[in-house]
Length: 179
Image (cartoon, rainbow, N blue to C red; front, side, top):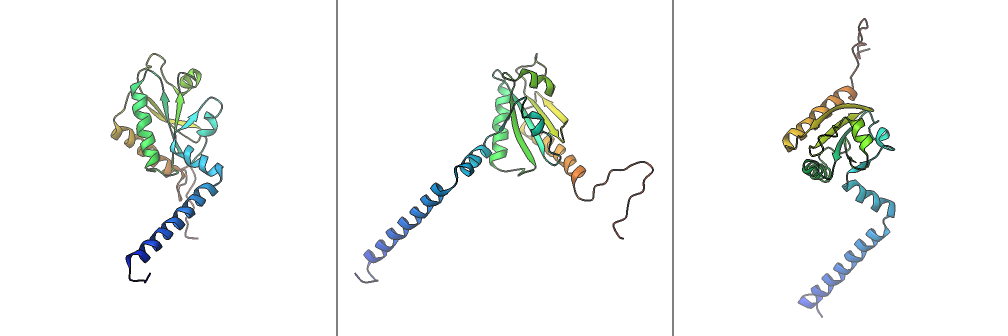
């Protein structure tokens, strides 16, 4: 078989495909199971309960957006789908943590978040950072409104924690950086 014949090239392409396939398989199987689990978990919304709620909202530099999920609420299902889409598209990277609370299984946490038990069918989203509640949306599922609220809180968070930010304290003069 000479180099000019089609059989020689076909044989080389088959060998190349087998080598690339074997390398890919080895890469996938060689990945530690913890990393595989972390990749899968990153695609899902973080599930919050009474036990992990305070720790999840404690970060100063991360906006935590919490969807209160209820069985009878179509709005909460719509919000869940929107947050999963934003997370998969990596719109906010590490700046925003999208999470959810099962309001039916955690009624005390739902009450702590400020949700009205009488409004079971309405969607409820809470915004948190630094262990504090920054705001909430009730009954709002318009994606543009929800996203603008996320960006508003995120902008405020960045302004409070960004470089060069100093609190204004009455009676103190700012230190100039030109020393």
